[in-house]
Amino acid sequence: MGLHARSLEIFAALEVLAPIRKASRTMRAVSVYGDKGFLFELDLTSLDAPYPWVLSCPQSDVEKALTERYRSLGGELIRGTELLDFTQDGAGVRARIRQGADVETVTCDLLVGADGASSTVRQQLGIGFNGVDYDEHFLLADVDWQGPWRSDSSHGFLQEDGLLIALPLPTGWRLIMARDEAWEGELSLQPFTDRLTPILGETPDLGEPRWISRFSVQRRLAHHYRRNRVFLAGDAAHVQSPLGAQGMNTGLADAFNLSWKLAFYLKGYGNGALLDSYEQERKPVADKMLHGVDMLSRASLVKLPMLRRTRDSLLKMAGGRPGLTRRLLRTASQLDVHYRQSPLVGCGPEAELGWRHRGPLPGDRLPDAALGSVRTGHLHQLHDLLRKPVHHLLLQLGESPGHKERLVLYALSDRLGQEYRERVHLTVVVARDTPVGEIPREGTIRIWRDHQGEFAAAFGEGPRMWLMRPDGHLAYRAPVSNANHLLEYLDTVLGRKGQ
Ligand SMILES: Cc1cc2nc3c(=O)[nH]c(=O)nc-3n(C[C@H](O)[C@H](O)[C@H](O)COP(=O)(O)OP(=O)(O)OC[C@H]3O[C@@H](n4cnc5c(N)ncnc54)[C@H](O)[C@@H]3O)c2cc1C
Image 1: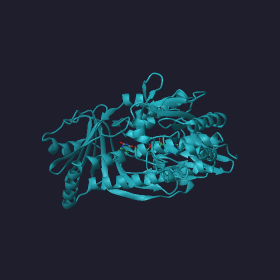
Image 2: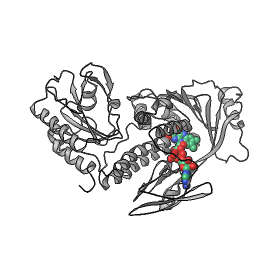
Image 3: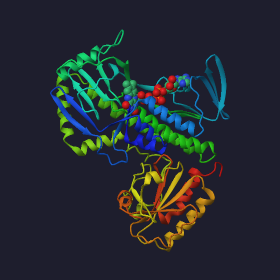
Image 4: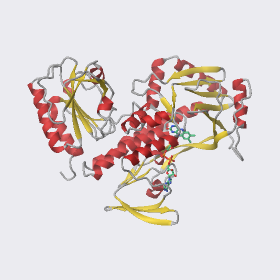
């Protein structure tokens, strides 16, 4: 249910944010209570991001919005089918699919196993999925009860009686509790009523559950995300405790990372490095996330009184340090996920120019900034301007662009237009007072002005070149004088296979 800031950017890029927001409740805070009452409140709105909150949206509504968008783009989605098994070789994948009583063999170039924690695809590939099971057993119920708490905040009770979490739904609450014994027999709301009574000082009338279920928690990571033509994404590749609300968010980002690479591959662009980079980029992200979520979960479930007291003191202290909570929040939001170690990202020989550490590094998520139209001054957000799912080359000119910068612009526009027309779009960014009269504006060149200095604050001063990938991460950065390096990079990563 919990959708973090980076996922909201992904939804905006996929043009599904509006229906998802409509089906959501906005969460602006997390309140945490220990044995002695209130510990701290985490302000979820302090992120420097276009969508600085967490949305609470049932996963069925997220899937509905994605399905409708996919179909509106001409995609076909067939439900009620089961992958039985598959084989692969140099020519492709042959998969046996069952629909009702019919079994059909489908041949395809590539296969993505997004088939959850018990993934048939992962098992048939023989890919290990090591990890641990948690000892605790969880009970979950969605209720229409209104509750006494502020409804734009989730509430976590880390107390002697066990963990209780209350998450606001678009209407009502989702309640989750944990205990050591399994939840046997018919499930009811009574354990929640019993647990809430001492917290509220009265017996709540929770009504009838809309949904009630039990679940257990594991932490596992697939040893590999790919074998030849077959890939794993989402829970098929990683499972974790739901505390911290990271699972679906991470799966979405897996898919966003993989999908443009698959599309390029199928269109005949790029080389093997493109598909190899999926595991190289996404597995370390899941590994780090699993460790963070494991720490959070174990701290929340700790039972020894002395450890609980220590934890509560630490949490109280952390809650009083806005710098620390902002860092934790940024990690949870997944805005800081980067692919700096990926062999697929790079930079020109920039170290000698002295700006190695200014602006985003190759692999980082591109920051957002307001840019104005050179004609009307009307402001737009950079992320919105770069919405099209292609690579975007941002040419950031200096205060007073000289002859050389204009030549580079001409040369790049010419070459990109000839060889990368559908794959790389060129956008020019000029400083607030840069005269634009002599800057060429032919073809598809778009010029935007850094009216408020937000671009320079996030990226540093020009002149520089920034190449953004379709998933919003920086593929390459270089000084403008290194246009040749950039073109070499494009040839290697995006050139036609076999060139
Ligand atoms: C209580 C709880 C709360 C959670 N809250 C959050 C949260 O707030 N935020 C968050 O980010 N994550 C949360 N998660 C985790 C999140 O639910 C999962 O990470 C997410 O659902 C994984 O999505 P998926 O598509 O990878 O896998 P799944 O949701 O498991 O979907 C896999 C699909 O594949 C299908 N399938 C399986 N085998 C086959 C086959 N052989 N052939 C055809 N189809 C097959 C299944 O039927 C299913 O539809 C929570 C989890 C739990 C248990």
